[in-house]
Image 1 (cartoon, one colour):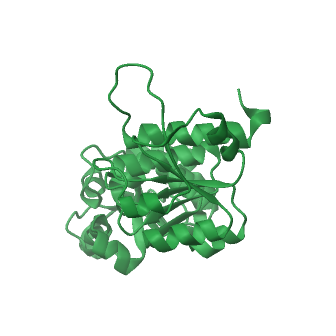
Image 2 (cartoon, rainbow, N blue to C red; image 1 turned 60 degrees about the horizontal axis):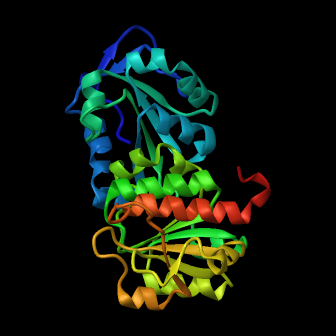
Length: 296
């Protein structure tokens, strides 16, 4: 990140101290090189070039600092956020992370959210390889083949985290998981579980199946109900849920690569569930079968 220029700092007396919100020097110039560099990470091309992304809001920063401090490059916080979330910044300081105080205007200029929550962390990407995930012998994976909506992608990641999935695989045909909207909608779960990104759909599915993991597609026109006894029995063994597109479902060529195509039963009058809702139901069905002793 670029160093601060003199026109960007408002001194409160004292020197900058690495690893804690120093409260002495406040970044105040919204047009500074540093602010522009941070905001540029809202663009995918810049994120890919810099191998970095933004974690916005206290919850995301808290989880990043607590679970993956190794990927946090620096933290920015307003005076108000520092007062409200002192422990987060203290933990960042204890981890030796650079923490900078900024004005409300600078914080707003750093991201693209309409209602910034006073804190943002610049993090390096968390990418892991599919080979490394498969080498760990996973029992539950979730593969997003053509998910384009940031909110859906983030919610599925959060659901996968909640049920204890071993990893989420996001294809190159899906939304960028480091899109600020995706990161916000994971509410910190992005820092909890391995995420594989940028893979070819067919190659990824073939690799997963080649590792002895059953591929189960979730589709509104599935051949079997999620509640069928045969399906539930398969959920007790290693498997991967394969999720398609929000609007047009799953391409025939992707569907053909899966071992089963399952639909969530609808008992009322709703026409369908959206992708994130269906994925959450499927993932919890898996958790119930994989962890019967902890099911409630």
